[in-house]
Length: 301
Length: 223
Image (tube, rainbow over all chains, first blue to last red; front, side):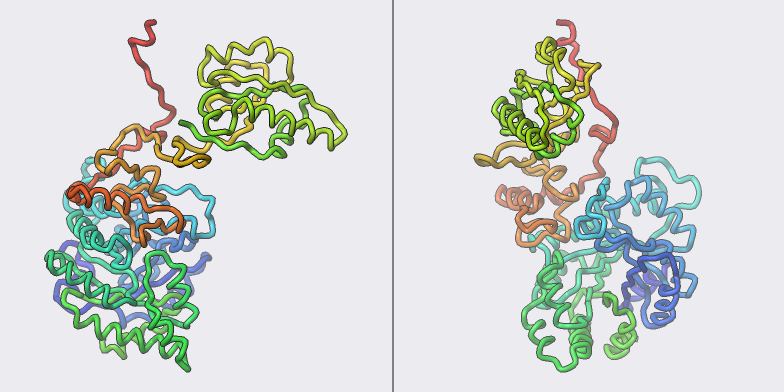
């Protein structure tokens, strides 16, 4: 065991893992986090907490992670490269570990242009691949990024990274995944999958290069709440592909929410059959309460 | 070259609202080439400032002079006699020009009439694009001659990020993704191995993160 985290244990056993995602609130109360912890407890193996997603200032991922941890839910803290340099990141990695965090997901982060502070100065001191490598170096070599030794307890994280099979150039997406694995990623969570054919082609290339044997891949899914949301995701969300067929299906549905849940369950059932997929990551955006229903109907727990 | 854009006339007029006698200093260097601060733009600014004042029922005495390059002291000193005659200087140079004027003429305020934008070049008549981030450690041989420090919105070293779609950057559908361009060029050269190699964190201390930089050439200082 590298970190001993619950997520690492589940994946190491070869069990089909289920993770969910939660966006912290835009205020200083942990009430909603605690409510969601209660709601998700027992239904998922771990919960990701986004790090100022879409570049909107929110309660911090680490602080939210501690609230989840205290409520008995395994957190996956997210860390983007947008807002912190290597000094702040390592400091937060040490601090978060001391507070019980054991999983970290490393990302570039959405550009601040999309958020509520577009005038902000971004950092991008290091990129997501370098961040993965930095977390690994701290764990496996007991060294800071600069090479200096960590003299006492090193942070031992289960290291996550993301992959987006729907971004371009398509062929390089698998190679970039390989770069992240080489850099030290233990698990991967993908962008929300709607174009199943493209994802299956991606996984074919992943298997061809033997990458599924080197890393645990969790396929991302997002239940659609409405046809309108599907359209927004199709047109406005960077790096996402939502096929027209899904939008039509949502538009024609009498109960769009029920249809969104049904589509998501179908997707999970199909993903279970894709070789090399080690689990699913459910990103129910502003709709976390639907996760237990999906998990139960997809017979994941 | 350094590429700059004129500030709106109204903005310059407000900056110098308290001055009635100014020297507009155009620059014969980059500011002329990017059509922002040459002799012609100096004359246009002078005329515009005069008519702005007229509308307010006031007058201004705006003299225009052009120096070869505001970023060289020997040219900056050339206009000492003209500077003596005025209350303030309006520079049509880049940020370097403004500072060289201000450093030399210590008893005068220097107002910038341009916004200095980037180091770049002209890609077609009337269009300039940023090309160099002045990072102090050129790695262009690893990126097919395409600079991710300037041309990638997240200046990432191991790109492209997950926001690249159809060859475009997530922040602007008109903007090419630098890493997509790098990929295409390296793929066409059969050199994707370069892109597969992990690039470690960059040493930003060689760039502006290391504080103000200077370059010294012993052979030139002894002249």
